[in-house]
Length: 470
Image 1 (cartoon, rainbow, N blue to C red):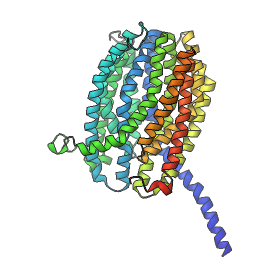
Image 2 (cartoon, helix red, strand yellow; image 1 turned 180 degrees about the vertical axis):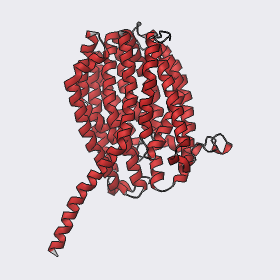
Image 3 (tube, one colour; image 1 turned 45 degrees about the horizontal axis):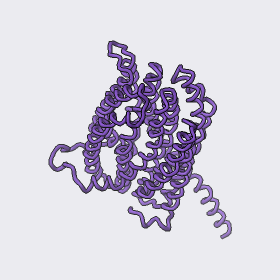
Image 4 (cartoon, rainbow, N blue to C red; image 1 turned 120 degrees about the horizontal axis):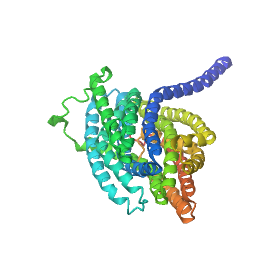
């Protein structure tokens, strides 16, 4: 009897680590193409910044301010449509595939509405640049950039709906292929329109916006063709009778998407908005500070693509675990596997920024003053890699649980109750400039990481888990 008991203990001891390794492998395998796709998306900002920086410091500063305004506008629909992935994964995990296409078609209507609203908002945003105190030499280029990118917002919202459907079905390869394919269009077209090469007009910062719009429309159309023709989606009938009366916009499914997704969108906007409002405030200090901030934030954004991809995969896998009946313990195991991967990748990112910051900054700009300031900001970016990854992963795990409302208030407290007041106080009040602003960002991210990981531990506690909708 004793021998049998010892054998059982040894089996449990070897099985638990084995399961955890399997969870890590499954998350890494699913996340790899998604992370590559996100990195390709982040590389669009890199390409834009390098081209603009080589054109002039003022052009780079204009792209910085324009990008900040553009990102604030797009973060809410991006976050709202994130609710689609865990919802699709639950249906798939529960064997209810016939319900996937109707939900997807309603998400397309929601995306269409969001894209239209965003077009109007971005058209009006150009009139706010002067009241916000953006330096006079930056405003014309920022306005031209915004006029260019606004035409791509309807396509961007539709692209998100398609990408989150595909992610929810655990097919992440299209995001990678289309991401790198878009770069092949963006780089030459952006260069031509910024510098006036290849017979194209020289449009400066406005050329960056037009090139991005052309890229996102091409990506969206290609994604739609893939979903309509690929064998793996054939049984779903995703676009069947889309323009018939039967597939008109319906309030109930759109309301359900908004109920779960809008808090996600607001939370994402609060995080991204913290960085982008910082860019707008730094834009008051002139072209050198704005250009250096754009370099540092672009590099930090590239690093963020890794935990962001792991967070999306964790949301999908948590949702699938719940749909397939694995319960709270299965959800926790998935989240811990993602957390272990994030700690490893973000430690590597932090070391890369710490050791290579001067070489990285020199890639973007030949202006010594801009490169020196950017390198010092990258040192601060290295400091927040770990908390940024932890908060992203925790938020993704909570999305998988469909716990989105309380996390929204938690990030509101972290970013806008602590991070932004501290950033403004140090950067503007005490005159520390960009350094003070970035210290405020770091504080907000540390608080957000602590609050969100604590919330996930509470929400996924098996003793409380039955209270959550399954």
